[in-house]
Length: 121
Image (cartoon, rainbow, N blue to C red; front, top):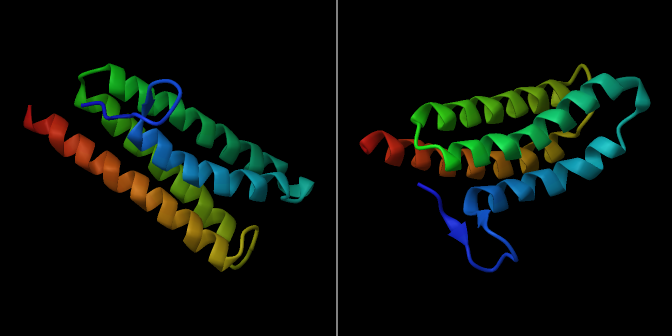
């Protein structure tokens, strides 16, 4: 169930490496967001960093339900991102939304494969 990448200094899940691409892209955008929107920014940052724990909890457990919780966390992040990109708010540009969505979709695809594999057991 766990896939470990060999080029990292410690044991890192491949899905976490993929997810880090999204975090590395979104983090500077969130830090530069106006302080008027700090509640949303803080909610997004909390969700982004909480997702790491959800991935590792799912990897350590053989329960499919933990993978579903990680999937729900990813859906929450996507929802917050959609909210930030809404034309009424424009906290992130359309292009930034698209790039971040691609990163999150790749992570979601890996997680979907992980869930399908766990269900077959």
